[in-house]
Image (cartoon, rainbow, N blue to C red; front, side):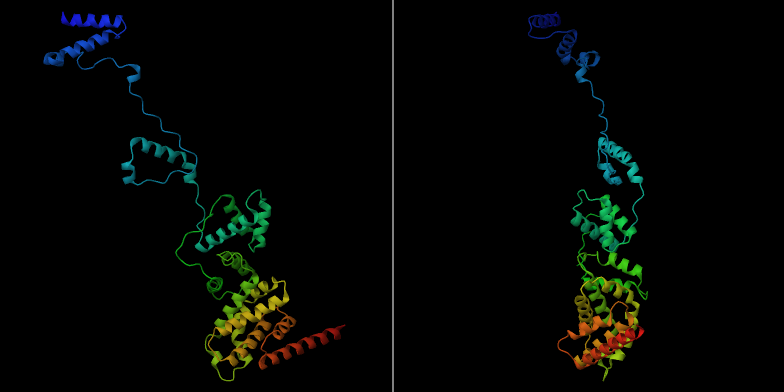
Length: 358
């Protein structure tokens, strides 16, 4: 009777709006009253579930994995990293890996050497600075790269890297960047005994000019090359020989200058100002000689000997240019005065031969 009384009381309260009554509520009330009885707790089927779950109380199904964002797939996780992830995180991870499968399977770019990579970086930076990469026409950029000394194939490769957004930032390195002189020497050493040709000049522009020295010019390159050649040819101690003659020095330096003559002519011809070009030649030869330990008189003789060898090895450096440069030297040494007389005689003979043909 007490249970019925409770049920009626609940029904009454529900009727007047104080409590909502239902058969389930009554069952819950009866279960609560019978909680103290072990028989009711074990045997009553209504004692276990309190009530039928409402639609809102139903367990929600696991959310679907979010669509993998467009772009490259995430980096592959290790077994230890995967073990630390939740089930949902692993599901999202594998979905992203599958979504990016096409990009992951795409063939990787050809591995570039550090020197090539730096060259590409500098070439890209140069084009970005000049064109600002805003509305620049691809054909114009291609021509700009070719004017910087690259072949058409190299220029197209650089342009492709730029358009794909690759190699934008230079690799961080604790190594100090090489000076221009050191970069030129490193490149020349890599050539071994190869005789310089047209391809050498192109490779020089790509490997040296763009290795942190993109703003350097042909006069800078020519000066470095002549200085390195002179130092290498004369560092064996020949300048200390007594009564050194220019012809001895010319014979010593001649083969090296001959091997690099294509590069020397190519760089020399790119200098528009005649006075600047011949000053670069004589000045760089002098710097190379000064780096070798020897008496001053021997260095004066060596300079004339190197000029004689350079005159015989190259085609673009004219006697008239050399004469102009030598006359500008101060102070003027006796051995240089004799070389100037020699050049004047050669030019006079040349003029006479030319007038005789007319």
